[in-house]
Image 1 (cartoon, rainbow, N blue to C red):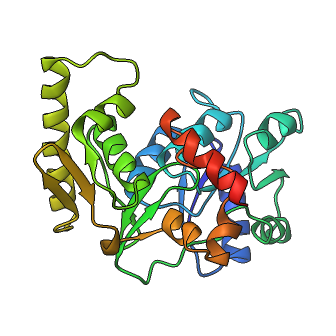
Image 2: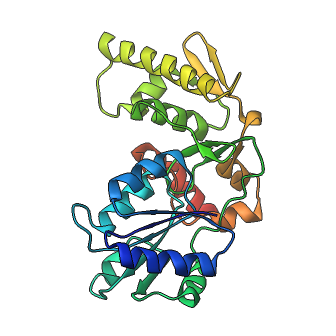
Length: 263
């Protein structure tokens, strides 16, 4: 498991570090006193869990948790704090644990036994797409970085169509909801398509984007996807679905409603 611990107090961080290492001896643990450095690390590593102090200078643990969830929606957040006041706010964020200092290895082990998102095995080097929670793409267990948020949204929309060809106008209407068609918008769209192709190529993914005049699709047989497994009746995928689907995007609400009805 890839785990981080964040606390702006060195002694408290050392205590949490010892407890985590004792409870999960085979994990990869990185410790930070600065939340900003933890965010940079999270952008380069798929985190299974994060043990966070709440009251920290500059950025609170609650704010840090939101940032980590935006980067990878299935990071299990466990707060390690000296205060019980934030428990209601913490659990409203669907965290995996709320532990009071001083934390013990036994408390860490109990929290990890009840995590919301079990660790994903990364021995499979294929491209994997996550749609439950936030949309993310992984190659060999590492998140693919999109330089533009709209490029990522374009990719997400194509994934949601499950291999069906989408017209350029349909895609633009979805990702620029309510914005009138114009030459400027079409130019932006062409740049997004070029950026998506370059992003996929840089990640070592070939022939994923299928493009014809006026329309495009993603080849569904070239990646693993929780949505596709769900639609094919996979019990594991159904159990993993927690009522959240591509939560960054408003157009995904219709698919989410369909999935809730199926469950």
